[in-house]
Length: 313
Image 1 (cartoon, rainbow, N blue to C red):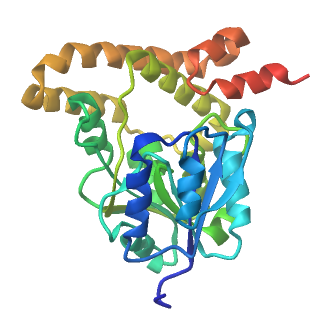
Image 2: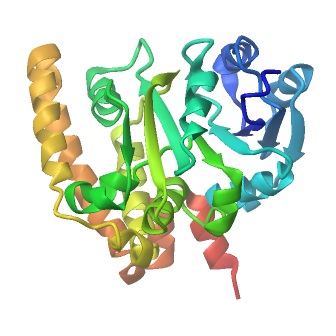
């Protein structure tokens, strides 16, 4: 191994990874920079996910599906990987796009002020126009490094990060208190916000790429944005510290309409409807404490979180 490369672990949570899993594993094996450790935490797969990963040298941990937690499970794996310098998190549906994806991402840590970084997500080749635009907008072809001085200009966008393909300097993650536990989602952005507020940098590395996009139905997208709104409400103290003057939502809608006019005009009515549903879902999520818990669970994508609350004494 090149001694100039910091030691790093690949960490991936899984649950029935499905037909793309072989592609995911092959992309890892083809990397020019190989991880020091390969860690997988599975929450009850009934397919070949675990067996195939074991064949590729992954260390396997297991967590009960009802106990899985976006932040807490990733934090437990971070503690398991205490002998490496960098923690690289991927999701099971984010396929490294080139043999240099890991090497390029890890290179961001040559700057000692960088606490975490994330790579570019490209839409899968079969992604529809609405989802393709989402990836192209949120993950542009220009790298950037953000610090606390960018909060006023970018607002919460300054703390944007995605654990579908992100890396953390383990010592700084620990200094920041690790990933927040008992989270619906957004554990990545919460850590990024803490890092900015503590004086560290967040890097976006556009040359480190994965293929990653979703084909959410309107219902699934509604549920996802409900959870985003709830996450913002539940982590108000941290995330409100990164509120600026950005009008990112309006810019996104304008960009989407321009993209669809050029590439898929027939999708414009669906995009307008989905935008209205996302806004409604987000606002309902923000106000989730005013809703009955059974209804909140029904509106959410990550129902296990609310089931856990209902089971508490």
